[in-house]
Image 1 (cartoon, rainbow, N blue to C red):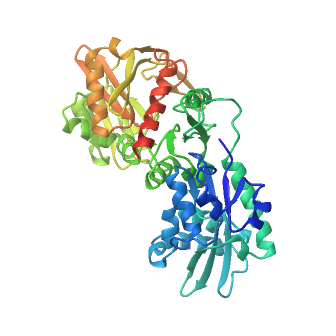
Image 2: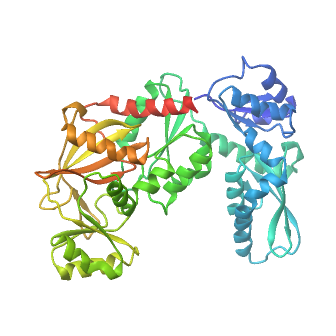
Image 3: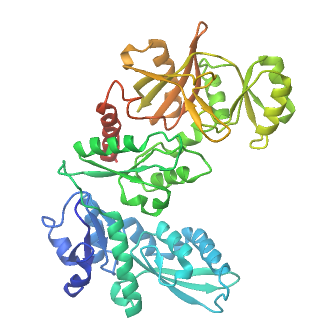
Length: 487
């Protein structure tokens, strides 16, 4: 993708700005859409004066009209123009400020100002504050006036022009600009279709059982390039840069209490299409919710009890042995245990209650394999069988040393899979939403039963793509394109 357009105050500023991208004045950018109208291109608006209907304001406004990505965007400009508006964000920013001050061996004694360049503070002691401020107000240069009434707090927060910086501040600003542009914009290595949009793929290279492996993410990249979508892997550390992309695809195991949910919420706030969305994560990661949802909608599922500490022995009375005990938010067979007698029931339950006030007990259904139906935008995407791990009752066997063993698999064309399996799976997935889901089911002589609904199902080379091949990835990526265009 082409490097950024850097908008500066006057022609003399082009000399230092050219190291970061294509340097233009605000007037040139506004008056020359044929020269500076590349769709999807980033625009760093350093014009400084963002007053309503001034050239600086128009630069960001027209960048959005040209389907480019300005920093700051018009919403940020409007927010920063009135303290009554940006004050709504100050409590979190002030909390970060106080955390930094509490760490200082010699805290300030009077009011002071801080200059922030692309999320970095000239005074390095306030790095945490600078990151949070940049996350809330994505503006290249900000100056914060800090005062102390009862507690330290930001009195004013204003955009700043490079010309207003001291020589020392200007040098720090140039370094921050260089780091920011080098990190965000990379030259493409191969000749492919010019990307119209960019898709961030959140993953964790160190995750033992990720929803998609590194080689699968590379497949998403190659297929994306062929249809004009730039697929960019990002990690937890890239949270502050999320808004630079057009959409977010989460390929890391989700949980409400970790960064994956914060990424989803951030994407939603930014108006970005995201799979999966925060509501889907909330619903799918909690098995208590799913149990109630399936029961309320009369979908077939193993008999399930929701237990607190006083109800443990009811599981024995109502389900018999063996039975399965689960924590509400386990994944990849973690937090799922089989009890074969009362002693095991009591011991396992005692351990699980250390992690959750409520647990689930479920009738035990042994099958040689589990069905998994992938669903996207209320349509079936793939159907796979996951065999049980060798000499085990689950598809993944977790060892005490952290290692794991997985069973074999077989993938079917959707129209070749049992019709009842697909129909029940889609009814279950549609209760959650229109995202990307994986519905796990068991089938025996009594029928087909929904085990759970996953919000970010496995999608790996050689497994779920065994039938559709590259088309599986293209279907997912085209859905992102559709959502981006619809936005």
